[in-house]
Length: 344
Ligand code: KG4
Ligand code: ZN
Image (tube, rainbow, N blue to C red):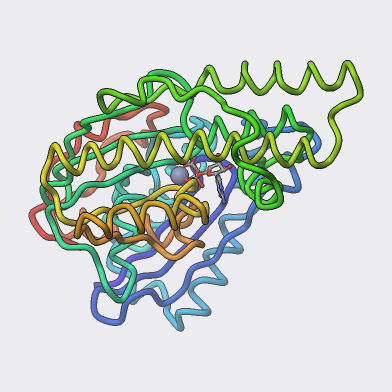
């Protein structure tokens, strides 16, 4: 079976063609970073309008790269939530229209299930069951994945997501949007032990809280702006301190979850999973406990349509198909998903 998938939940317009026998045949992506940069963050209305402009040319490009005609496509998947509602609706309306025109089923995909199943695109896919650390701009979750489609959220953030903490701290340091990767770059030249930023609830439980971090960073920055002490070395040290606080928290909680669940494989998914220090630290810590770590390749950590195609094809094989009104959901609990009868 061959599926065409659309992703438009935030500021990336993406299209992929995926085949259960031949694998990933094409994945095209247009990032809206340049469009939103001057505003310092994603402007939802501009994002929706740009998805409308980008999706059709990306579909044409993906079909050409995949050497596929609409007649070869068995289903159209699209991200139906969670995300920015206007942005989601562009993909939902376009996906449903394509499916209708091509006479094939349309499949609504949960964006986070896409992130969770992204490692299935790699040569060595993770075994099931496993533990997943899902860290993106909007979510920070520890998920016990019994099987594809069976997700128990065992830990979550009470406030900001890890990616949000990276982005907000980066903004306070005057780094351009999107802040996470920029902060990581700046941190590489800094001392990680000069600034001790808060690590709430580090000693117990599987819950996260990152909202105090931006306050602490804001104070550290303000103090030095006042007395002229915010030189380049200090900015790098603050960045390294922020990254250290976030990474240490994520690693500590993930190890605790491994202990509590007894899982022997760990999946790290979502945009923050692209962070090199996090990847390195988790691999080392899990390795010492005999736990194998599985990551999607870097480009499939952040938003993309290849992961939506994998999840969409698994859902299509399980019989999922949208027939009623075109729907998108800004919020959508992972635990609302039905178990998949056919793994990807
Ligand atoms: O999964 P994703 O592309 O979009 C959402 O579904 O949210 O994640 C985006 C998030 C942003 O907060 C971005 O700053 C963060 O992932 N991110 C990083 C890195 N690359 C992306 N954070 C830290 N280090 C990175 N290298
Ligand atoms: Zn995402």
